[in-house]
Image 1 (cartoon, rainbow, N blue to C red):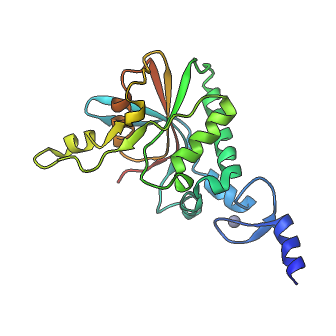
Image 2 (image 1 turned 90 degrees about the vertical axis):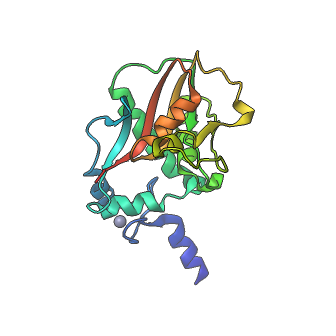
Length: 218
Ligand SMILES: [Zn+2]
């Protein structure tokens, strides 16, 4: 009996969204759910405006959580580096989308994942960054941290958000002024994380923001 299950496991996979078994390929979604997620494929760059600053982000999807269950389930089910083949697939799609914009990535470049409080093997931004870095041959430098324990009382809301992200002390001397920074996160919501991160990394030669999805704002 065990042998039969092993055999099934070798040639079939369980879809992350609907749970159905499908022939194993390099994906974690069956064809039907793959099509459901792709109907919200982002047609253009996501734009966020914050304090006079305009952020543009490369995104695979325009994600409206209450409208696309397949995509919501899929994004929630992606669990860090244990699913590296899926991250490689997503990285490849992001790179393809970036290259459609024609202009070549300038070098030297460095990839900086969004800071996270999760363990590395549960960290979406890091997993995606590692997959992109491996495919482009660009170093991944997780140099940002979320700062906690800072005395924040008496500050206005936007000031609090501003000081939540900093360069890790091991990287405090890193000079990015001659590098293009590719900042990578899983989901772009308000843009505050990206904006605070870029501020913590400055000065940079230039930057780009890459995300899996831009989450619709209410
Ligand atoms: Zn499915």
